[in-house]
Length: 151
Image (cartoon, rainbow, N blue to C red; front, side, top):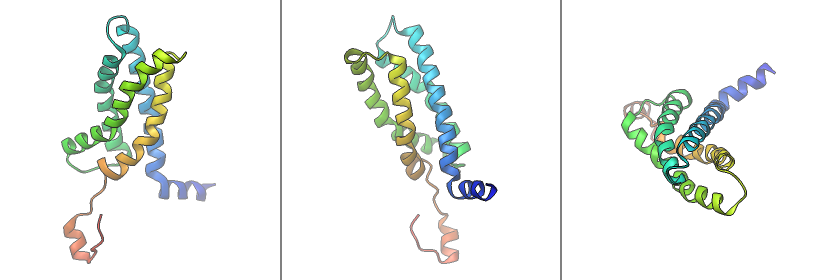
């Protein structure tokens, strides 16, 4: 069992951490959405509630993914912009899906967001790993070792 756990951690550390942090982030987003929706739903459209929730929760997600999962050393502002660009298609899709699902399904907003949040963890992994927090080889190290492969 110890050998299996060692193999999983060695070869799949980022995936295990991403699932754990993604799970936390999904729960955090759902709780924030639920609280904001409960408080503001009588006064504002669901799309505005999503915008407020995204602003609040994307900072938590960025910090958790950057420091816990990927241990990135890139420029924080540049990575934050890339992180937002990874999540933007999902966020924009959610802006369309939530109002339509509220109108045309029997599901309430809390259930719709729970389903959408779980979907987002899976989709976001690829963009975050291979673009937003991509590890770039130091060109000086690559040159001194003769490594000419592309990062």
